[in-house]
Image 1 (cartoon, helix red, strand yellow):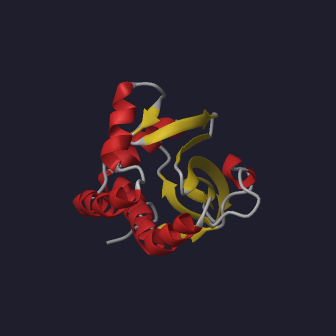
Image 2 (tube, helix red, strand yellow):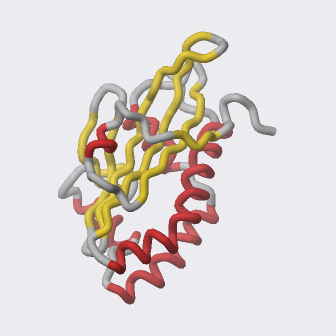
Length: 179
């Protein structure tokens, strides 16, 4: 049964997020928010690591299907991204390269021949009926380089939305790490 801390809302990409200024006209821009309990940690990197470490099993199977399809087009697979991350050439959260960190936000992403994308994990405080509440906002922006990128985004966008919503809902149900 959903509660205030597991309800995921579609929201505008927050203006304070660094991803809003990355691409003049992104080919995809979306954001989803979930309320954090008062005792949840406030480190966006640790929150991001928690979200990506607790994906549902069906997400892994969906990524395997994606990899089987995109490998034929020379796009990076999850296995290749994990190999890059394990090589330690750059810092990563799961398969995503860390681009920037601040006290309230971490920007992750990847560049490929068909598109570049960034994911923001932003801790945001909002005024609510109950006073001030903290939210975790996961925003994605994508810039396509060519027709393959635009086709790819069109094909995966519905799955992307399901995965993001599921990841936030699942993390909230498991219980956020506490301070």
